[in-house]
Image 1 (cartoon, rainbow, N blue to C red):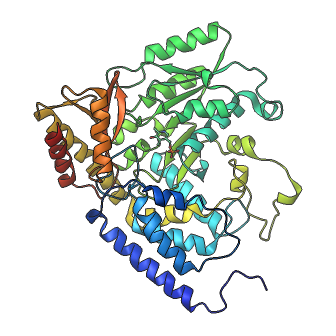
Image 2 (spheres, rainbow, N blue to C red):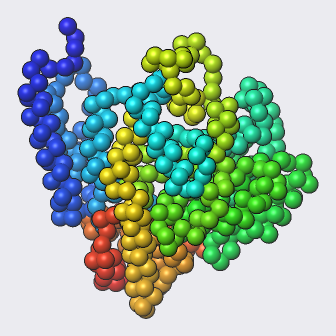
Image 3 (cartoon, protein in one colour):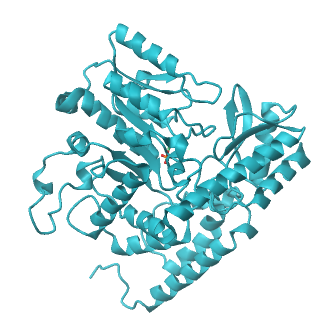
Length: 466
Ligand SMILES: *Cc1c(COP(=O)(O)O)cnc(C)c1O
C-alpha cells in the first residue's frame, strides 16, 4: 500500500500538539521578537536544493521550519508592522486554517457544508455593505482577483455572450478611476483583453478624491471620439492615502451613462463597521460590484479576498460554462447549483470561507468595527505627533488609517535609507510611497495589535535618527 498516512498516528499527533503549543506561544510573544529580519545567505541557499526523491520525517521538517522559515517571514503579525496595507491575522483564523486543512474540502462546487458556509459569508458581506439580499459573490485570493472578476462582469454587461465567445474584437470600451487607483485595476483591464490604456485616470482634488467635473469631461471626450464608457471604478480607501471617492456621485454618473459601477474597497469597505466612518462609504450599497479583502482590516489570515455582484444573473452569465463532467444534478452530491466555479474563474478552490466565517462569528462586527476605529485613532495620534514636531511634516491629509509623512530636509535617498534601516534592524516596518513627487514614509496602521506605545515609539525613533 502506498498510503501517505502513518501506520501509527501517535508520533504525528504528538508533533501536531507541539506545533500548536509553539504557534500559540509565537502569537502570544510576538512583541518580544523583531518585526522582520532579512534571510541570511545560507538560509536562502537552503531553498535552492533539488526536489527530494526520498522523504524526510515531519519532525525534521518542523525543526527546519523553526530555524529557516518562521524567523524570516513578512512580519505583518507584529504590532510594529505598519507597511503597505497588511492585516495582522487572528488566532481563531489560524485554527480555522488547520480545520480547513483537515477537511480538505473542494469548494468549487457540489452540495456540502463548505458551499453553505461560503454562501453565508457572501450574504453577511452583502448585508454589511448594505447591498440587496440576492447579491452573489465568491471568495478569492484577494482584491486583485476580485477587481478582475468585477471587470469581467462589466465587460459581459457591455459585450454579452458574444464578447465571451469572440473576444473584445477591438471594442473601444473605456473605464474611469481616480489617479489614486490601485495598480490591479489597470492590470484587470489588461487581463480582460481591453488593455490597460482603456483606463482613464481622473485627477484628484486636494482631498485625493476623484474630480467629478474632470470625470464628466473625460467621458464626454471619449464618447465624442467613438469610445464606449462601460465602467466607473470608485475607490473606497486608496492605497496611498486612504481617500474615499464620492461614491454616491459616481453611482449617479454611472446610471446616467449606463455604465457598470464598481467599488474597489480592498480595505476601506470595512469602514462600514465603524459608525464614525460609515458616512464616508455612502454609495457603496449602490455598486454593481464591490471588491474587498477580509485579510486586511478584518484580520482574517491570508488569503481572503471577496467580490460581490449585485445582479446574480450577470455573475453567472459571465463565468458559467456547460461541461458534461461538471454538470449539476437535481439531487445528490452534484446538487446545489449554482456553484462557485460558475461565479468566478476558479474550479478547484479551498475552504477559504471557514476562516472568514469563524473570524466574523468569533469576534462579531462590533469588535471588528472597534479595530477599524482604533487603528484610525492611532493614525490621528501619529498625525498629531507629526504636526507638533518641527522635524516632521505631514504629506497628505489623514482621513483613515494611513499616515504619509517626511523628515524636514531629508532627500528621497535619506528617507529610503531611514525606512530600510528601521526594517532591517527589526524595529518597525513602515513602507514608502511618493506623494506629489516626494518620497514619503508611509505608516498604514491595520494591525489590531498595534498600540499607542508603538506609535509613540515610532515617532521617538524617527526623531532620534532625524
Ligand atoms: C490591497 C489593495 C488591493 C489589492 O488587494 P490584494 O488583496 O493585495 O490583491 C487593491 N486595491 C486597494 C485599494 C488595496 O488597498
